[in-house]
Length: 367
Image (tube, rainbow, N blue to C red; front, side, top):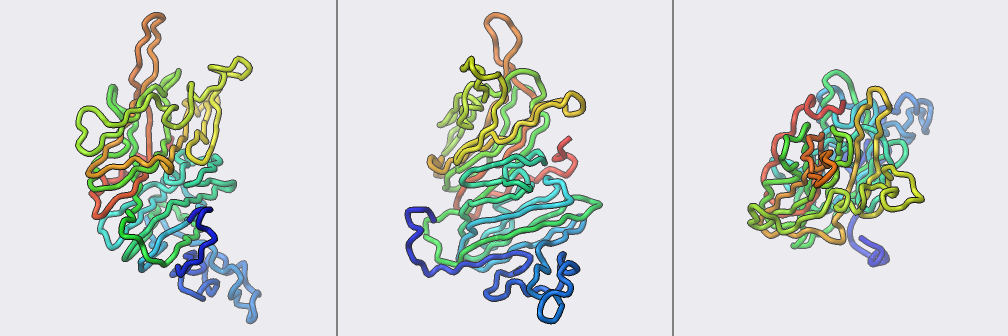
């Protein structure tokens, strides 16, 4: 859907899954008699049972529980997901999506990172594909077609406490074009990045598809500028050298000059400047507070919606972590050993290669 075809009539059927209608079945919303809002709805409704009065607006997930939050027979497409969690760290909720009965997930990511919020702290994101709005409201608008079946799960990795999750999954039941590919998203984290090694955003992709976006949560472990590194896209048999090579980290995320307007404009103070746009952004800069928050942390996204990176057989994506050494003359780059996490977004044919095992809870913890 887009503004150019929004006026056209369609035989597609609109459905929505939420705690008020777990199956998305027609005419079955708002019928719960039990749920997280039941006590608040007592005395309401025709018989005082609360029926139809926000009895089940959310779910409670116990420690260690995995819950199926959507189980849909196709063909169709996910069109929008809204979700907000409570009483849980965002990296303790793991989102997984499975297409057409595949054994392995095509989407696997901590919840916050999938929604461009990798640091467990709110920052406004206003883009076409992902929006994060006040009250830590996570929204995504990636189109996710499926032909036979869609299954979406959430896992609560907290070993001792429950999570509360509000969500709405809006989808359509409709025919899917033969050339439509399947949505994928993969999380990775390396902390610290080994000296003189590139950070791997994505590897092991086999099949035809196109790469559509990158989110990165980047924590620096050195003083000084950290974004001289180049992003590289190795595709369709590339080995030592890539087909696409960027010119700098902030350049790839559609910024310039260290994300610092004061570098080139004497009327501006020298500081990182957050921005969030339709296709790219630096929505989050977490600055040191002088005590226990000792390092600067960044959240960045870049969507290839207008410029998808197409591949025919395979794809690997890497980025360098580069700063500057302190020489006064003939300065050299400094390979950095930063805390870097990412989510890669792409479409491809299935079956797809299984993802590397997701690291355990301790390795993903944000400290």
